[in-house]
Amino acid sequence: MPPLYRRFFLCGLCLLLLPWSGACGSNQSRDAAGAEAAPGARSYGQALLRTGLVAGRHRRWLLFADTTRREYFRLGRTPREVRAWLADYEERIEDHQTLNPDSVQPPPPAAAELRGPPPPPMVTLIRLPNSPAAKALARRQAIQLMQQLQRAGLLTAAEYRRTLPLAMAGEFYSRRNLLTTFNELARAAESLRHSRGLPPMLQQLGLLSKPETERLACDLRTGLFTDPVDLLARLPHARIFSRRQYPAAGLPYLEQLHRDAARLVPGLQFSNFRARVIRRDEAASCPSCMGAEDVLVQLQIGSRQYAQRSEWHPGYGLDGRNWPTIDDSKFYGIFNQALADQGSPYRLMFIRSAQARFTIGGQQRFGLWCLTAPQAEAIDTLEFSGLWPEDHESFRVLPSDTVTAALRAFAALGFLSHRSPAQRTTAEACLRQVRLIAREEVLHSVPGRVAEYHGYPQYRSWSYARLLNVLQKASNGRFGPNQVRDGCQHADGTLRFHFGRRIYQSALYQANESPDPRLFQLVQRALREQHIPGKFYQVSATLAQSAGLAVNYVFLSPVQERAIRQKHLLALTDPTLSDDQRYAQELAIDMAADSTFYGASSR
Picture 1: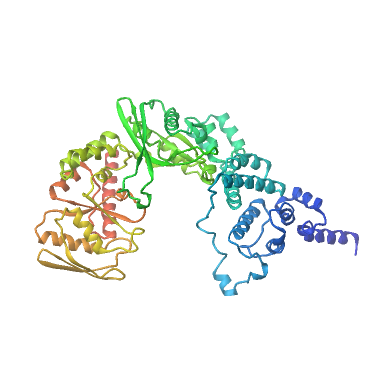
Picture 2: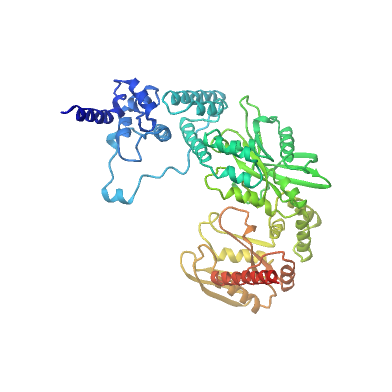
């Protein structure tokens, strides 16, 4: 064989044997050299065995994973792929699965074409230690795993330094949890590295000068930022919050947290700070949350009194002391209410931390950023920015005076006639504890006047019989059907009920996602024939406070309906209209509004 061809042949042979040359234990130095030359193409099989990341008894499973072409079992050739495989390996050990390559049977060809690899589990179960000794053991195991990953070349020195404090603080309680978290944090860091459009956008919005923009762009390219919330240290009117910077005791923590948030916007300095932990109302929209605790914060800004009710989460520190936390994504709403009252264009926006999102154990870390609506919308539209302001509904918060005026208007219409003076005072106090974005939400403090009809997931199926019962309560008994026979539970059928001395029935579609409009045509006809003044109206879906499918209805007399439309208190929808008719009606209203606007502009 000519020398030139012999050289090409030997080079090709070396490339074929390189991935498992170290796995056979013949040349570990060549394995390290190969990793330095082409880390994306190396095999980590030998390194996993050498560092103990894979037990020796599972050598055959590792060899199968490193050589198989089946994607679901493949080891991978990059640190992220290998860490994901290790997380799956740890899960198999936790579930006591037999790691035997001979037990893996290839699917039939037809099934393989139709069905891809099994999807990842939707829920990851983490076994939390429940004793100081177990917590200490979990921390030692997390640190040991990090050291093993670093020795295997699966963790850079920067990643190790960044994650070691979390492991020391007890944020990881299983090897699988730590491996999964590494990949999630790496994905967040990669998103930041590719956010090339973010710096010029910040400069265009007037948030950074040109030198600051150039320096931020350079630092993003080099991977200096690994968590979106860290960018707030470079931005004006922004701050990073961490629970461990505050006292462990609840009241000092809450007061200092609110004072730091208020400093982001001039004019939000407050006085008369008070806070107390309260039990959740048994009538809360989440039945499974009963027994939990909330915290009620009260303070004064200028001459106005403000209140905010937020979730209160019990926690613990490494020393065993209580370390409670407030809902970090909601507590600042009290200041957005004050900004709405002042007519300010600014709102505090929540910035989620990737580190806090993918770790457990009380690592509360987040950011707040004071922005205008155009600024928040512009940043939110950037692809791959990694820095997304949340809670855009804060810009729609109703001023306190608007809420009070709506409550008084509903009282004048008789919506509070069934409440005592003390109950009215309580309802008004409850309104000050939440942030409202629509006038109809005021009616949530007036139980009995708005009927909320629940579907999935509270009930497995819709029921016209249950809906009629809801409508009866909404009308305060004026609409009282009886002997209801619902033949539309599982298919299209007929609904029949008695009202007055007459029988009413109609063919209806099965109520899956929304009730058949013919039901309300039947109900409205029954009211008219029984000489009962008033109609049922569907109100805005913003009234639905519970998760899942819910529709809201209100019964109004003609006088109430005229007053509500004149004062724009509620967005009323005729439930007798089909979806197509409702869409056509809304389209006609929008076209009329556009015509009026452009006509005025031309003049």
